[in-house]
Length: 314
Image 1 (cartoon, rainbow, N blue to C red):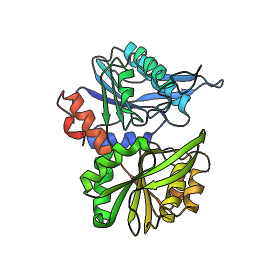
Image 2: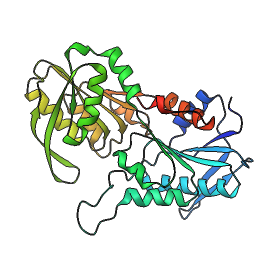
Image 3: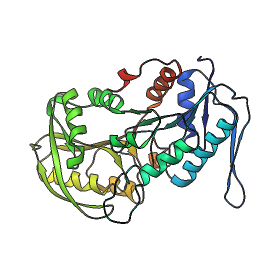
């Protein structure tokens, strides 16, 4: 059991926080996070945190703004309680897709959120699979961006025939990720060429690569509405793919995503638990959820011990 460390959590993902605490061999620290009748969030730290190495586990998923505010208020409360160091553990970083100006007169929301988190008093950030790695540069504090690849790769190796497998990038931006997976699995890759005409709506244009009579895994960092993944699956099937699977780190699954996956030809959707899935696990029988608690727990342990975590960046 690490000494001088405390793990706090808001209301966003208590299940994952319990798993991480079990890995570390500690109890979740006592804090009250409630809401006043008018919607204001109230935070109270119920135990001594003076001089302690504090970790706050809080993915900024739906409801995004509420979860961000919970995190900020917990950071401020612990800073004022004289915590020694405050590390925000954000398995899923909300607003990450708004990382640049794609048209005039729009904010760079990912940068603004980064500034707010640091301004609240956060000393360090630990996250998983940022939408783009450049977001690390939005912070003026140390950022450890872990990859869920080891968790996904282990499952794929154990459950798939690697000799007949093709890793598929759903767009040009994900080619590097697909290539890294394919290299470790020693299999080939394919790319979906698509054009996005309207926000959250994508149109598949072409499949680049040999997928005929192959088992294919569409690999992405997140699945939101599921439109890209479902359309990509259809395009792969049209090109003669034997079976189509999908894998991602962050299962946002908003709107009718679960229904879309259920109706699609995708045989299995492999995800991690960076985001709480609640009833979606029952609604989608194709969903396989892998835990990243050991990965986060080991990173937290090494940060606390001031030892290297570079071996976790596989």
